[in-house]
Image (cartoon, rainbow, N blue to C red; front, side, top):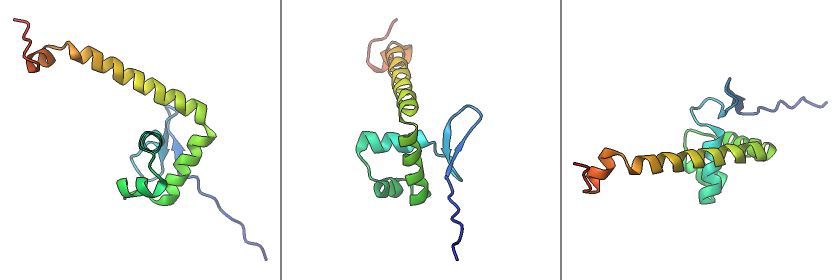
Length: 104
């Protein structure tokens, strides 16, 4: 007798189209960035995020590979936004004061 196998995705998409890992406050892209940037294995990611199960982590990575071009675009856009914010912050009054370059 064959039993039906139920597969749980562990990934949910919110109303804004962002992928989240089930039962957590972790976006799929966060796990993917750690995997890409640091070369972390799923086991290392689990060590860094002990509240995530390995099945959730593998599901997040599988989701990334199934949606690679869209997620790579999302990662690239977030990097550009961070670079832009860093450039803007370089000239802020507080940054200048911290550098000892007061505008007074």
